[in-house]
Image (cartoon, rainbow, N blue to C red):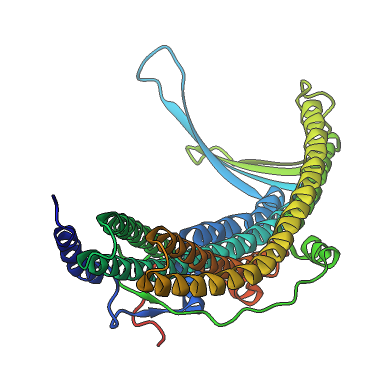
Length: 444
């Protein structure tokens, strides 16, 4: 028959090896300290999505200039060599020419230039929306690391408590107060706690790697995350929050500009029915020079009567695009209302849940302490103690998750209302330099 003391020996050896394995993955005290504010600055300066959005702004700013080129003069040249006669030795003539063309009236320039300006403004709004979303992504990744660290701490505490319970069951089994069943139950609980801790540590490392990628850090770069300052806010009324979102959301303002762009595109096609005036001039330089130069100049008025129907098709498509842009804006309005409602209710849910889970943790801690004392005195069963330990671990993990989820939810409320990190969004530069690795050391 297997002696109870032999059951505990492998467990003690594994417990001695566990701190060393944790020390290999956890960042040391000398690792750079990363604050949430510094993470925002690093992401704003190096994120690839923001740089792409900035390039889109630069490209859109060229559209008004592109419209003006329709009124710019154009200069071209040509060279001709002509050889005629019955014999191959017949002399040939060469002629050079310069052509100058200057549009005097093109009504399509005005809606095209205005549409280009609106497109540039829409591109800047899209960039600001990308900045805000990127900074919120930093928030989510940062708090996921914090949550993982706290979960690892709670799981280590649960492992220590399971270790104490296993040792207590072994001592009582040695003196014959309990049967080997109590030792085996405590062993199962200990191994479950050990497995949960290993899972939590690996999940934390993955979350840390996600944050490294968000901040363009080197793989496996060591860092420590600092606890952010308290982020308390008064939950506004839903109607006030929704009105703020309708006023500040860049994507909604961009959709409004999209409707205006579609209208100007329609006006641009309509101008194709209007006449245009073009001045042309050319000068020819024949060879040999004995032949006199010739030049001519003209002003022409072009009136398009029929273009094969393509103009009418483009006009119909522009009306369809206008209707489509208006419908997309209506869909976005409903989407924003839904996002604001969800974020608002999420904050309310977490506020109420936090009050309940704090009371749950206090009751679970006292209940586990009482059960452990009763088990030591022989008035409680090991099943009750292990069940109390599970309840305590679950309550602590819930408190850890909910407290950090609440901090993220408060920031998400600002994100859906279009005010999250407003100073950084407005200060984000348009032209960016190439991304660089995260600069050490971080602020201490």
